[in-house]
Image (cartoon, rainbow, N blue to C red; front, side):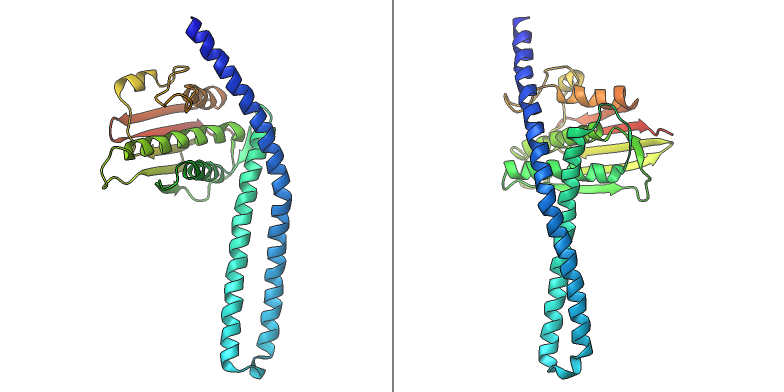
Length: 273
């Protein structure tokens, strides 16, 4: 009993830290969004100016030596490509920031029409980049299988994004841990798929990591049970994910795992009309 009380007290401290971190993250995200908007807008304006410049050059191409004309065309092409990359990555950063703000400001339990593919993609890659930042030199292959043309689906986006992030974090941990003992032939991989079938939204995350033994499978959803070293896991993640999927969305969270070979988690959520 004393040990359980100590665990609860420790968890409360962590929750307080997370709450403070959430407020700080929301503030930082809001402040970063404005300069990012300027970067994107000025890139688009510069692209338009490049088009105007191209038209002027085309109107006067007979006055330019051929060599100069070819150099100018190459420079303009490179500039257009650079501008497109700035806009692409700037908009991706904006999308991530909007996701952070949604998580921090979203109303508890509010269902919203959501682009599921966009949500899953953003939080899968957010987890991946966090893993890469913490473990430099380690990498994994991510294979994405998204059904095309999916309409917005009613979910609680701030909750579903948390579930996807936690599952991806676990997958990254599993493949990294296996890589520490596997041979050089081992290639860490995570496969993510999103589809709608039989009026059900199905999200699957599969890894080829260390897998789970029978004890871990049986205790997976127990509070405070974790296979991670002290300080790296609270033992609450899987219980929270199951609550998000089954209690809040009326869905089902299932998994299959083979020790030494990998684990697959499947989220199934009935589509709300």
